Amino acid sequence: MKKNLLVIALASVSVFAFYSCSDEETTPPTVTISSPSEGSNLNVYAPFTVKAEGEAGSGEISKVTLTIGTQVIPGITTLPFEYEVPAETFPVGSYTITVEVENSKGLAAKDMKSFTLSDQNVAPTCSLSSDVAGKEIEPEDVVTLKGEASDQDGSIASVVLKINDKAVDAITSVPFEYELSADEKTEGVVKASLEVTDNNGKTASSELSFTVLGRIRSFTDPRDNRTYRTVKIGKQLWFAQDLAYLPSVNAVDDYSKTEAKYYVYDYNGTDVDAAKATDHYKNYGVLYNWHAVGGADDFTTDNTVGKQGPCPEGWHVPAYAEWDSLFNYVRKRIPESEAATYWDGSTVYNVNGHLRTKTGWKTSSDSDFPQLEKGGFDTYDFSATVTGCYYPRNGFYYGPSTSKNDTATYWTQHFAPYSPSNPGGLTVSINSYRYEPSSSKGTDTSRAHAVRCVKD
Image 1 (cartoon, rainbow, N blue to C red):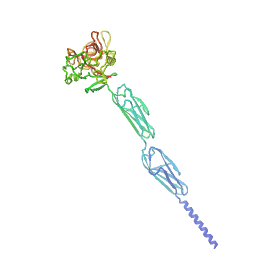
Image 2 (cartoon, rainbow, N blue to C red):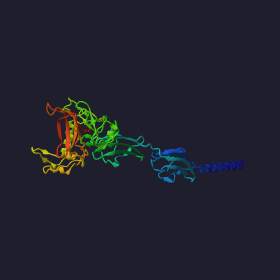
Image 3 (cartoon, one colour):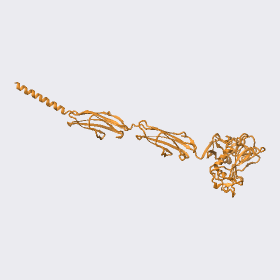
Image 4 (tube, helix red, strand yellow):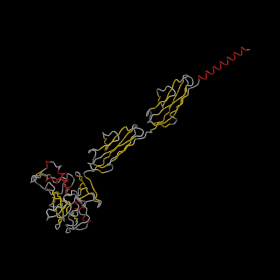
């Protein structure tokens, strides 16, 4: 009886041992992806980390496979692991991370997480500025462009500054200050643009424009809405037409040495509208006596800048010094080959010819001054033309289409007596029978001549 009991007990131990060993050998591995979380939206321009952990179950971990999308990542062999995916490894899109593990017993497990890569890069910012933005400038004005840029989640990789669509090679980084060359300040609208690109390929831009005034311009007098051609000669801006402001008009027999008087050549009446309807007014403007141009006894040739007189606001009747600046500018640019010699031995240049219109003048012929017979050149578009003048008691003289159409005379506001017994104003004349302009002192203040305005 005891013998049988022993056999049963041994059998029980054997069965227990068998079942215990079998359970251990069939335990599968486990794996869990802890990062990124399911449904994460990640920045394609930033690195991200894949983390996984787990147990071997039966035996040991024999194989680990990390797959992102369709790409198997090499070098992953154990659990747990952390693997950093470099920025821009994968393009924008939706992906699945799969981690598969296998133990030494041949048992396997896997985990999967879905995520999205999107463009979350913040674009850079930039600004282009200048004191002249939106303004009109002279060609000789200094123009400086200032550029700045920043990128909050990266760096500025490239900088391109363009002037009228042409890249400036000298500018490659920000911030910068750049002074435009004379060649870059072309007449008309000048456009400047700045474009910067960050290290992730995103761009930002800024632009501005300004206007470089040309030599030929225009001005509209707000008093009567008459528009004049104007011209930049050197540093001076001149009317390229005679002034036509006509607040009133006087008849031929109405003259004065003390009061302002206004005349329109060949018009004898007092109706302003009728005077303005004449061809001469439309083409040549108005003749003013000395007081109408603002002449005054205390305004001597020591004054180098004229007064407004009948010119519009911002403009004035030129002083003799301002006329002289114009003449000198032209004179210095006439080649020596075109010079001539006066009877007194002085060298003269055909300043008159370069300031006169090409037509409308009586021509002169003189072998000592061969430039005269070539007529007017109007080199600088000043367009001095024969507008005529008014003499008290005698009427109009030296007008266009007359036999004496060889002189254009302009008032200054200077009081310049020819002698104590011959007081009067100072005029400046351009003519077709001599090279150099001339001036006349003691001009009767009741005479009327043309006016050219110059910018303040």
